Length: 168
Figure: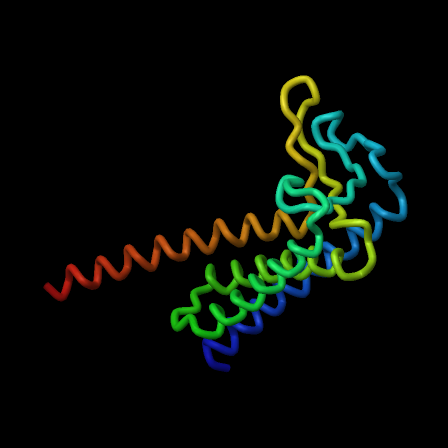
C-alpha cells in the first residue's frame, strides 16, 4: 500500500467516524432535549441544549441559511481540491482534512435535510461570567482540523526554510 493510499484511507476513516458521531449526537439531542432546554452535564458549566442555528459561526447573520449552505459547499469543494493537489500529505495534514471535511458535511446535512437550522447543543461557560455560543461535534471538528492544518503549514514552512538554508 502506497503512502498516498494509506493517507487517503486515514482521511476517510476520520471523516466517517466524525461524521457518524456528529449525526448520532445531533439525532439524540433532537429526540431527547426540548428546544432551549438545558441539561447539566458538569454542573451548569457544561450543558446540553437544543438550538437551531440559522446563521453562521457563533450564530452571526441569523436567517441567511441558504447563503451559508452555498458557502459551505464551495469551501468543501475547495478543500477536496486542496487535498487532491497537496503533494506532501503528512499525517497531520491528512487528519486535519478528514476533520474539516466531516465537520463541513455534518453542518451541510443539517441545512439540506429540512431542519430549522444547524443543530447546536454543547453549551459551555457560566451564565454570570461568560457562556460560549452553543456548538456541535461538526463545529469542534472544524476548529480542531483547522488548528492542525495551521500546525501542518507552520511545520512545512520550517522544513522548507531549513532545507533552503542547507543548500546555500
